Image (tube, rainbow over all chains, first blue to last red; front, side):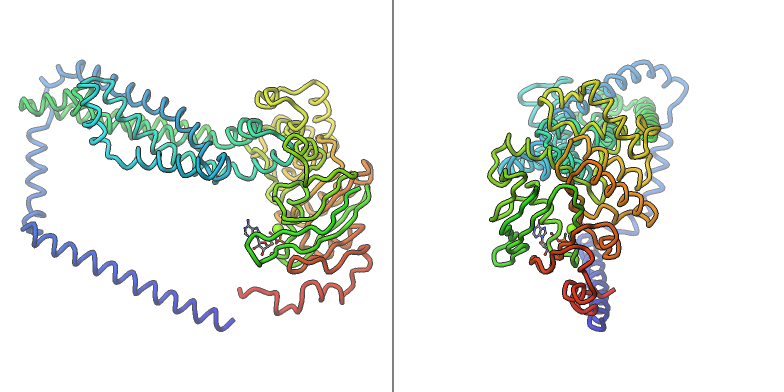
Length: 267
Length: 252
Ligand SMILES: Nc1ncnc2c1ncn2[C@@H]1O[C@H](COP(=O)(O)OP(=O)(O)O)[C@@H](O)[C@H]1O
Ligand SMILES: [Mg+2]
């Protein structure tokens, strides 16, 4: 009894030491980094208000910039659709792989390792890199953007779905297996119904995320809302660029509110 | 009759979880397996329906060895063995009725099971069983809306619709309050007698085991140290099973 208390105190002391050490190290890295990059922290901090007031003045939409709105909304709609399409297709593919690869539903160890590998490969290549790579084969087109989003989303969703299956479906699965149910019966009668709320929650999150990412990808692939933002920006129509950003923010907030409502209903 | 001979299992080399377990149970009997946590109770229960692959021995259900069954034979044997879990292990999103009907999956073609298509007879029986466990008005409610005691009764109905010869219960009342525990234990006991089936329950409440069980099996460090009628479990046997109180208590 006494011994375990002692080790607990020792453990906590050790933990504090590690935390202080990490803090110190981070501070040190920052100072050395600033020195090497010749970055003046105080100057940097002082320039923030100036930068924002420049933004506010130049990007502030005026009355005339409203005339850009129909074109912006049109492109925004295209972008939102692309985000949704990429997530829906990715989800269908990901659920299949997640079932093959999760620890509880997986067929064998080899498959589990393979699926984990594929997922982390797709996930860990940055979206921008995917878009650049795909540009070689598919040129500047909506399809390139769609594919880049699709591949990254597949990576994310396989990983997320596998974790959901492992956390939420294991117990019900075991019960059905014990009744003599076959593999496919267990998947369709226990695993899928059990994980659907979490699945939908992740799908909604990825749609929000992909609307933002699709903007970035659009700059590279020359499509959607990203393309016209880039166009306005490079032709110094900052007010139009401003209203583009504003519309993106509004749409993302609407989507977020909408998906929170959906979550409330399904969970 | 269920007969277990020389059952053994180790998860890691040289660390046996079970050694030489032997027992025999006649239909209509309620058997409690008791013992300290980590003794091997769950391992025994899950070996009986081969959710865990044990290492050696024989498990005979009416003379058929479940250990040497191939995949389709195992499926047929499993459907004769119901199982009830500490955490109920229901599909919480589905209705009470659907969860009860899951007990029929072992009897269905893969496609009918995947689609969740059940016969009228099966549905009628599910409703009758829900009536029996006192849940008829909850049939179309989601399981997530039920209390713990009600969920466990759904679990019982799911096991019964399998028409089992044996029901295995792994800590069936460990997550329930005292009142629900009594209801569930009494229900199990009555059903077992009525249907003349075997029930094996892992329990950690010795008093409940003595109150409800006909036969008690005591496990310690993977070995069977007690196997007799419930009345024979006296203080000396309990001390032998759990060791000195100090030794088994974990530091808080
Ligand atoms: N999957 C597993 N892998 C390794 N060891 C296990 C596993 N399951 C159980 N054990 C070990 O086997 C022993 C018996 O466990 P268990 O049958 O769960 O005991 P009980 O149900 O009596 O608490 C314990 O020592 C436990 O740590
Ligand atoms: Mg256990």
